[in-house]
Image (cartoon, rainbow, N blue to C red):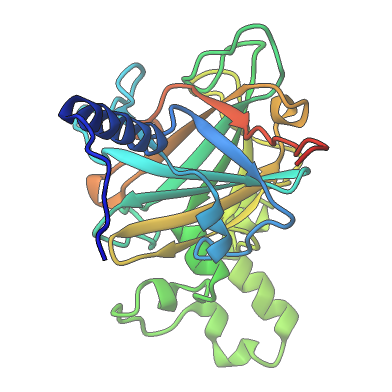
Length: 295
């Protein structure tokens, strides 16, 4: 059977290939901002398959070198960000490379952590990305690996934190106190003064995420309302952390907003202001195109 095929001029073939390659490149172009995708329900874990639905944004990190104590040496190059919403809350997953796992507190110890930051109010201009400014606060949801280890079940005790230490005994473990639990508890409180005074940072933790408010560097305070939750897991290459917080006002109104991120690496001795961070990044909801009546 003879079949004939059309003979296309080489110029037409070349033009078609260029158009095809151009379309493919356009389809694979990386996003320029953090895009929130609407889902029926939010993932419960950072490894949840639902995260595959979200668009990944590669956020470049820069050292915090504007206020003391500054970070002068770069560590984490970037953080991979995905965002989902169920219409009420915003779920953000942060992933970054980190070979070590730093999740033990103590003197001269540093631990892994991350945070997301959004403006507290919708205004015509955004506050400074360096934790806001006077009269223009920012909301921060902060996660760290020490709190995660506590929530995951590591005992909140000296023996658990220092398993190789040799201790004869602690006074609150004396045999004479075991018959009087109230007296034993009172003795143990002497060795945990911050916890006894009600310091929420002293543990034990119920959540690895803390809500905070700031109006500029060195103004960080604990938010009176603790609405964020989350979970972090160590992966083969780094950390994968999911943080869920109330949907920012801008996103709730379907308006573009701003979001920023920060990462701390314990092995790089990063803590407090010594961190890798981003500038403000646009945060917007994905446009949903309703099918027309003819479709």
